[in-house]
Length: 178
Image (cartoon, rainbow, N blue to C red; front, top):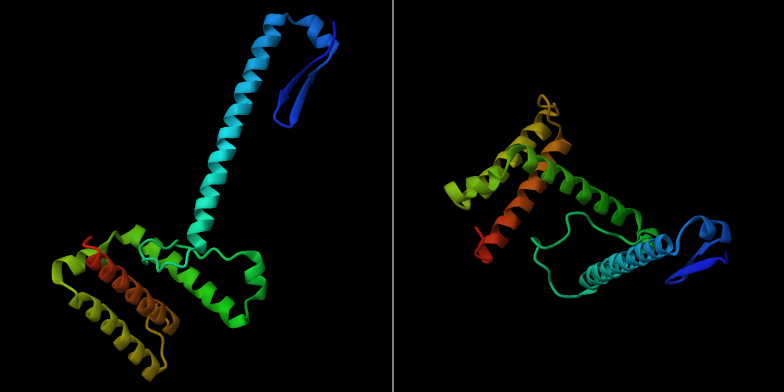
């Protein structure tokens, strides 16, 4: 029995004569149709993936001012850009990525406590939380001692975190989403 081929885009499946002599034309046709459907499904998936990637890249390249609510949680830095970053830029990128991870983890652990406090007590909560951390920082710097389970670095991260949470709250209020 002669060999048969099934073409799937740029790929060809070759069925040698022995396979063809052991299986009927009906089995071959069923297999051929299944492979063609797989090829179509793969093509659709590849097309959907390419479209999503194009949309994402267009969004990254757009020079419109994005809301901080719509910004990606993690900075996506292309390797060629990262290779050209100076030491300061790298440190800033790493610190903000770490802060982002911490804020997301704490929000997951504690729920939307900051947002709920602002809803319950108003925007003054923003200043109160930041002021609490500023006072803690002042104490840590004066006494040159560590408060149990909190360092100067932790306090500075908390200050930055509350500032970011405050920015998010203000953005939500501006958009009428509070």
